Structures are given as C-alpha cells and as structure tokens.
Length: 149
Image 1 (cartoon, rainbow, N blue to C red):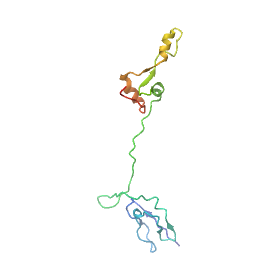
Image 2: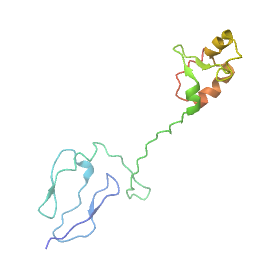
Image 3: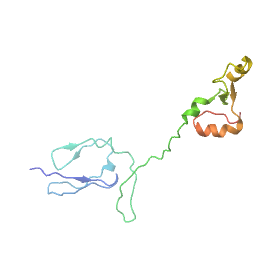
Image 4: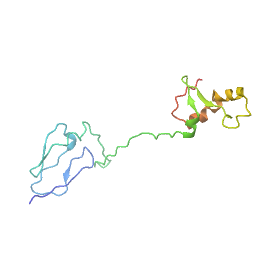
C-alpha cells in the first residue's frame, strides 16, 4: 500500500518538508533552485517535471526576525479608475486645439418667438469660460484638455 505525502510551502525560498514522514520518503526539496525542467523523484514511482514554468528565476527572500520564513503576499499597487460623469460627457467636447466647448442655452423650445438671427446664434458652440474649466475637468477626468487655452 502506497503512503501519501503532503507538502507545505510558506515561501518560495523555504524548503518543502513532508508533514507525514514515512521510511520511504526522501529528504526536503527546495523549489527556488529549480531553473531547468528537471524531474523530481518522489517516494512513489511518479515524477513531476511541471514546476519549472511556475518557479520564477529570482525568488524574493522573506524572513521574519526569528529566522522562520513567512508567507509571501504580492499586492499590485494600481490606483482606482476615476469615473466619468456621463451627463457632463454628453454636454461638453474638446476641440482639436484642446479647448472645451459647449452648446448655447435657449434653443430647445419656444422657437417661434425668437427671430432667425437669434436662433442661428444659439445653434453655434461656444468655448467654456476659464473659471469653469476646473469643474468640467473634475467631472470628465479623461479629457485631453490643453490648459493653456
């Protein structure tokens, strides 16, 4: 009857020791020194040769003050994405020179009493005032705005 051996690994540098020792089990195996695809001989008749793609070339050394290896946790230091205010994205756009433009107010309804010259003027886009740039850029963080304009 074949005995099963369980392994624990706390970091990539720490050697793997069997939890349940049997007379036929081998000594400890350190995975950090494996760089080539060399098979590992275990206590059973099976060999494992799939560890080489999983093990990096350089393993970071993590040790505590008492000398025991600690478990390694890798955290990506990525910032969060800023959200675009969708109502503002529909109202403003950026010209080729980097200016923020908007439509004029007053051309939605009650157009019969407005003369043609006034309706024509309200149809055109106008540049956003410089004092409102910070508000628009805060609502639309990914606009390609030229702040010099």
